[in-house]
Length: 481
Image (cartoon, rainbow, N blue to C red; front, side):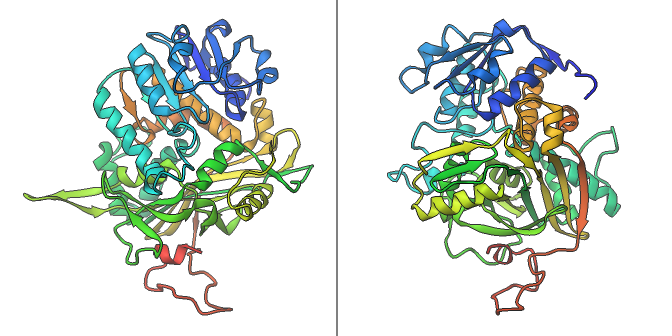
């Protein structure tokens, strides 16, 4: 990248919570694209991880683990009106930090709704209480309580986050290719709000949205026994993998999953399975990898996108859902991470003795991350990023292909919040996707859209008979492995 445009100047202080792979990768992007002096940036983290990588930027590095009983006293001298709290931590509750930032008059952003320790895996909590649906409902209740105030962007990494913007662009592309009026031209007006986007998806006939990701990055040192290897946070991946598998549940679905459960409160846009996401596989497709099996890991976008694209009809007595797509993650991490998950499952979901986040030892590969919109008149359309490790290293220091897709989305969300500082708690689906895409695109490698004739029925029933719904290839029962 020949030049680094300054997207926004920020006069407040920036507090970054956590210093794992994402904080290390996003700091150079912040210093490039946001006008802020290094002495006004403080990293607050639980240990020395990342100290060496961030020292060259002249920011303050503070080891102070945040807990329920101390986070307010630690953050009080660091955060005030007009400042920014960037939460990139694990095991620090997002809702507590959102409320605190609101009280202090500070902006806020996170990449997922994180609970206090044990919130994902506490056996005393019911499976329903450990879902992202429940976490999002709590965040929406907090939004109602807080009302308007400093912007707090929740769940804005690559996914959740960036993929919500991919969905909107994919819907517009699909409308153009089908020859349907979308309400938007290249720079013109967009569909009007939530209802406009939902009606567009309904008119296009989109039944299913997969967040379809295939990470092919390979390292010089293979995974060892007793080691969990990944291209991004091991703790984050294991935590979400141990949550129940979860998906937005579409109105076209005929067969409810055998281990499926509905929630008894809230918006009702999602269901969950009574099994870990890392033990649940689904069929999907990306342009480079072709068809593959991915893990049905729970993610916030599965809940928020399905809710955002819901069409409801009201009568005198009740509100009826007349359209909603099925939305879920279908994730094939790097091969070493797949082996790590298999070993983790064999240990009955007890973490391995050691963990390693790949970076400098990666030799080759890409992270192909996008959205697969399916069931419409053109069958299936994938839109997303095909970022290689080589290009990621050229674009930004301390990054892999996987981390950079997250880091640039964090940057874009921060810039948007600084430009729109009075929106209160807000989700990616409600933000200006064009502004976010404008900031992200230079760091995403090839951004492509591809049609496919693949369906979950392709090549099925040859070696063994299967219980399939051949009348509708995009039924979840056909997608589930």
